[in-house]
Image (cartoon, helix red, strand yellow):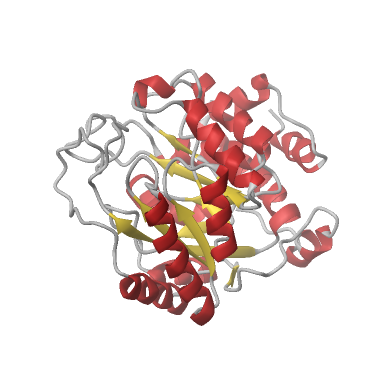
Length: 346
């Protein structure tokens, strides 16, 4: 396989065939550097040498009526986690200050539950307005299922992006959740886009899905074209139904990231949950396909310290972008990325 032909196809706007996608997912270990090099060519063309840091806050923990099998906050989880109602305005504002000091470009406010009530939307809107008045940082909210009217209220308050992941393929979805459907998630994303919000939507890999499920959700995300695509790798948490599901290798995580870059070529591609757990010593290599990472943790699991993440990014020769309103590198200006970086290869 000449992986560079896949890069050229992605840069030209073409979609990889399923056979080509399978070839990436099942590439031999000795080809990993060639796959990374090809994915980096696409990343460099569309995203240059920039890296975005994101920091999230678990604004409401546990107490969730949904049965998502991967989640330590679900109603069927017995995981030993903190459970609390929505944090105060002051604590959420302080979290935004901490995120800004850590050089995060975006602050992600996450609440557990099926979806917010009208009062919860009003309270969150007030918090977002206060943050936007004081802290120069992008704001993404992840609040469960949402209709257009509620999404519009968040948009008017200053939320610029809504996170709601597809999580897995339509076929496999009933295996990881029964209290809502894949279609419910698509409806929420449709409502958010109609309200004028940018979309942040990705998947969780390593839940027991097949390679075809990986391809299905990856291609669904390509069709959806969210502004940001977070790639999560299942962190098996004791007390959840998937606590014993742990088969991903560092190389397979890298292959999945490269596939996502080929299929979602222009988008911000973020390595999210499970990065530290699965990639371990190979974490720096994620920056070849991906241009965004989380720092400081993921709801109920710990993550890399901001200072260590910044050092990793800088050691790899990339540049951290702190301002959320910065223009992304576009395909119409490849000189902002490719020419500037020369021929760096992993």
